[in-house]
Length: 137
Image (cartoon, rainbow, N blue to C red; front, side, top):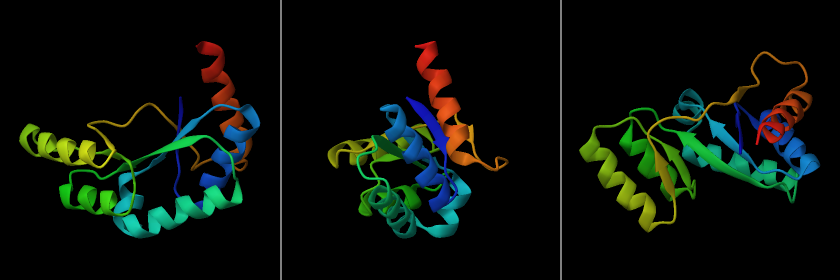
């Protein structure tokens, strides 16, 4: 599944439009600085707005919570069901159990992903990325 770093609503909409056009699911990865700055409630609102703008696009979400377990717990409260956390094995294990109990996934590192920061045409960049990964499968 193509992973795409999304730093705002425009990136989310571009990634979802490309996913819908290709018929392939994407993973929207919300970077740690975005999650920490906006907070999980605003991240959830951004994802909901993108889904409303591009209905029917197949996707999943990974919110990078850095090394902040409290942020990860807060993200779970806001129905963010994919989390990345850099934590000690003990803390990671506890949070993984909590995530599983709520139907969420917790991983310890971000996947390889497309960064849309430097592109003028995010949707085209997403389409190319999705096509490239699809042809490699």
